[in-house]
Amino acid sequence: MAKSKVLVVGGTGYIGKRIVKASLAQGHITYVLQRREMGLDIDKIQMLLSFKKQGARLIQGSFSDHQSLVDAVKQVDVVICTMSGVHFRSHNILLQLKLVDAIKEAGNIKGHIKSSQFAQQNNLFSVHSKHKTITQLKPISPFQTQHNNTFRLQTWSTANPNLISSSSSHRSSTRSQMLPPTSFLELAKSVGAVASVVSQLKRFIPSEFGTDPSRMGHALEPGRVSFDEKMRVRRAIEDAKIPFTYVTANCFAGYFAGNLSQMETLLPPRDKVTIYGDGNVKVVYMDEDDVALYTIKTIDDPRTLNKTLNIRPPENILSQRELVEKWEKLIGKELQKISFSQEDFLASMKGLDFASQVGVGHYYHFFYEGCLTNFEIGEEGEEASELYPDVKYTRMDEYLKMYL
Image (tube, rainbow, N blue to C red; front, side, top):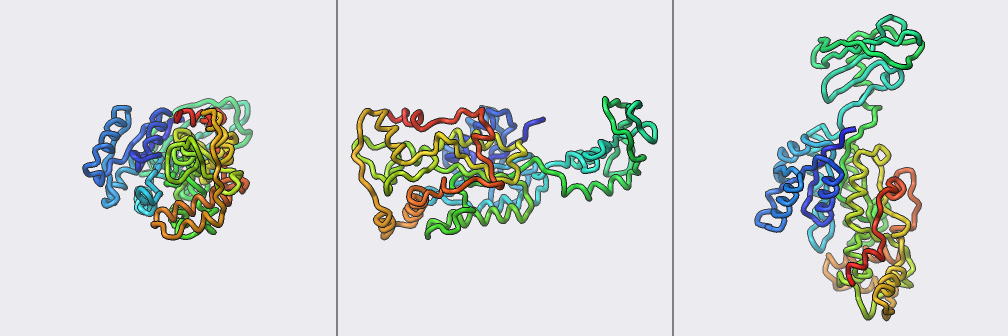
């Protein structure tokens, strides 16, 4: 099966640049949206040019130019958006609603109809809306038997009832009885009837990559704004009947593991460490490159279509204390541990700026409530490491070695 053509929106961002590299490494034709809003940001421009050297295709587009987004979407099979959703950098989650509108208008994100329901049941017809053709596998005799396996392949254009080609074919096994030939008009009429029941293989992956917002209806203000906005995007996707995969990647290691989950630094402490509560609540730490690879693995996988991919590999489900112990083992030293009670932690929100209050609220749900691991993955989701056991994901003791 040919690999999907991928458009990455937000390809110069923290997770986006990794998605681009993973897509290229997996052999996908990869487009990266080049937004004129970048202006004089030389770092992002040079990153785009480096992608181009690696084989990516840059495509012009802007969220202030609807048609440019439509034109970009029309060139690909899969759209992955990685726009920032954190308030201390930039927060653009709702811009994705414009992308949803562009996908709806482009009309191609759902891909083409692979075959009609009738073809699947009777091995007679193949309907290809992308190429605007219908192929009939027609028995040369009116009633085919198991002893006569000669068929004729006939192809029509759906634009007009003209026979394009006709050739003989053989099949090793056939049904003992088949329906008599169907007229072109009857066959064409069936296309619309079966379109809605055929699974689509193409999809949109919106910018999530953190906590599953569908489980965060109870989240604290003001941090719940992140989850509410992501749910608003989800509703727009599903209302438009756009095939999707939602990716929840939990805690990026660069923000949560390298610093032993401390809030005011991105480097690991070497003397003392703040422990949230008793430090035994389980969270999930993920190397960002692994998140990107798991994401790309989903795009041609029917098992993840219209589902949530939970990236929750068992050896990366750790408590904060377990993470600290890994670091202590690496440096050969025990850190002084300062416990931060739930009450004191929540009280620390007072007087903070908006972005900091959002961060404190999220930390509360992760490290006190355990929202990343206190549920079973149901039928609406899949777990990444179970689907893709070939991925050698990074364990956190290996990850922390970078900081030695």
